[in-house]
Image 1: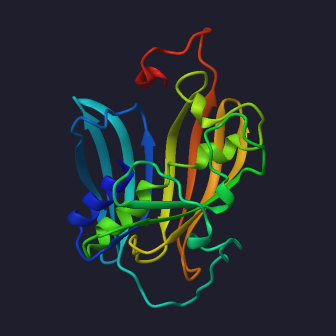
Image 2 (image 1 turned 135 degrees about the horizontal axis):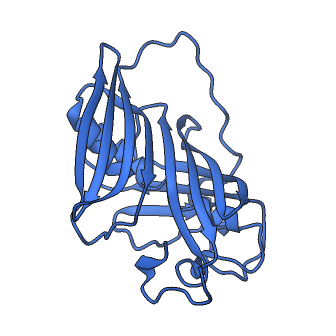
Length: 246
């Protein structure tokens, strides 16, 4: 939904690229059913356009977003954080998420859904690329956003023994509540992108992650934060239907 909102915003405001996108996910959506994106222009000037986006399915709001699109300018100042010192994509094991056209390679194989996996720091690094893409800047930015919700909860679970994503929607309830994404450069999602996920807090049934995306040359492409929930089910039994786990 976040990726599609970025693409829709780019279609609305050609010649401007998304520089900031914040989306709150109010309820789960069925991936097999159509989604409707309603865009409202809040403001537009010489430099920036602000859009509000509501995502609905079957007349129920699933997510709401605010996006800022801008016209880039020549550098007055420039600096960025360095990428983490990790092996390159071809030195990392691949991870099959059954998504056609997307390659994922996890640094040191630290992404696992096994509750019995060894504990470690709340960090997961992964190389990601999408193959055979058209030359469409909005689509490349949207695909970068598409992966922002995948591994932050796993990073939060990693330091804690006896919990893993295999339990999600079964014995523990997890969900992404909000993502805030800042895009710092034009994106080529058909090149390797390094996603650095750092969980900075877990408690009170919530987690917080502060993350970055670098390209293979180390350039900072994007920064994003993820607020998510990790908590037990009310009562003793998980829902029989995984979609009701929220």
